[in-house]
Length: 299
Image (tube, rainbow, N blue to C red; front, side, top):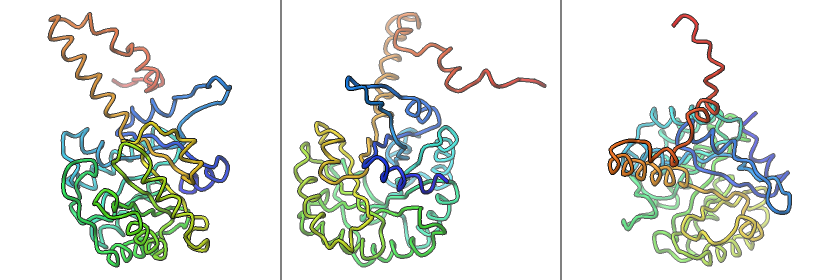
């Protein structure tokens, strides 16, 4: 089952590289990204992150929890159909208790492996904006975690608490206290978020996290998202105890740049010829979507 793939992969590999996908095509492209480095090591992504930011942005909407659950489910369905690798869902704040319970049931039934919810009040604002970020009451968020844990059908489906304390201006110690409360509530792990351009506060948090009682952190996972502190490697982060490293928005951001450039090229030249070098050949697009397997009978 895909639900238990993440725990199994972490046991086998130690840490996982997860890449954002915002539709079926982006999942197909990342799924087939496979290469060897200079040491002969075979490299690939281990799974996918269905991001609220990139899902919202791909629909031309802000990342403020206004995309409907039905729309998110459609995106998730596309990704799950495109790949057999595990999927982690960005659950935003999780909504109220009832909304979160419903989310857990839906995402688990669809085949997602994990949902991560952040400890901010609804409606959240994207963490990397200049908005004011208000954290949810620690006991209320802990109760939300408990409710999700209680309603899931399979313990292999993971519920992870995303800590926004460093984003909101809390100290590392205060953020760690929230992590401890959420682990006691039953969370399967912790994601620590930061928008600093270096990894120091994330690594400082990881060092303190490792000093928590072993009975609290045993078999729990630690997750990070090195979007702004992007000079540190996945292997370096893993050496500090991180089990999952998420590249959370890079497929959409890179596609934005490419689409912007091709639009300008066509307008400037009054034709598309000059833009062909910026485009993937149609044959490759047909191949990755396996259009040749369709019979077209009866059309």
